[in-house]
Length: 245
Length: 200
Image 1: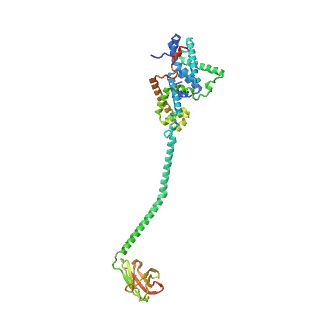
Image 2: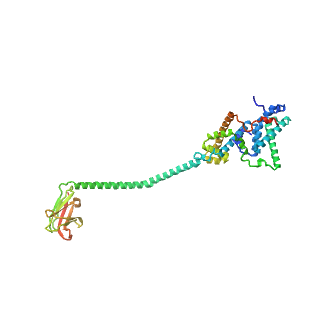
Image 3: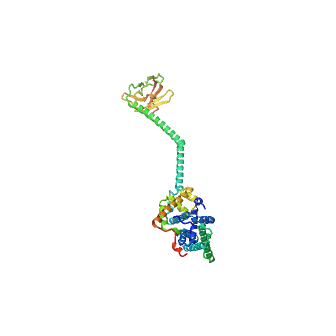
């Protein structure tokens, strides 16, 4: 028996563990009987195996040593699988966010931004308007409307500057004892443009009210004054023509 | 000075040199005892087989019955096997014990004979230097006797590396063991027993 074969086929260990065929066993016995080196190796292998088995039996090679390091298949592979799964989940979530959720969110954000912008503009406009209202205004157009029952007459023309925010309407009323009046402003087609309630005579016995100039675009208007408590009672009727340069 | 060859030993024994008989015993005694111990699983039987073997061998040498002195090792082995066969044959006839070949010999019972103090200490030192999964590998291989692919699967060590781990551990063990036996002058199992040669 050649040493190379003994080495390659682990003959020494297999002999020690009774794993050789009867023919191999006899052949190896003939060899180590004449080979000091192989017999020494055989003796050492016997000691080694006996010692390892004894150690295993007494817990020196404990089973719980098969922990994380000893079982890459027990932790590394599941860890790898978990990492891959996590990566896939993250990729799926990212893709879902990119292709489904984010565009929707972007649309919502755009809509919200547009709404905010519109609201901001409206607020700014209102603030500007409020500022204008609160601010003193010069050259406010004052329309002195004479009380008359002749509606067929020519309309009273009034020029309202483009810069005017308000138009003041002054109604001269016939004598009366009513406490409150209602003013209704109608357009040329009879459509009500504005209604002002609870007007009371001032110290001149007249009614005065201001109305935003934008409420009265250029055109003719019929303005009626009725009793507040009895709206069907007409106190006065006026024709007004607004001209804006 | 180089040890005498088998042929020289035979010649000297035939020339009446008692020292050569002792040298012959020293050279082959452990092997005969080892084989006998493996087969009989009994120290006493192994001792008896060894004694009977060397008695017959020396008688053959003295009687010039060894045809090929160069093949003395094979002659001694053959004699040992004959003695063992006769032993088992006698026992079989007496209904005492069947030959070990027919018995379950998966786990050699002679292991305990190798478990001396030095072996245990050398094993402990060897194990101390192993990684956890190398320990597990040795346990699975030598104690649980799992097949290599299964060991590789459980430990995560490639099958071709299983053998490497084993041989590295064995090499380390041999170094520790040799160091201990040198330091303590411990006797190896069944080493020379010069005192017995006188009775042969």
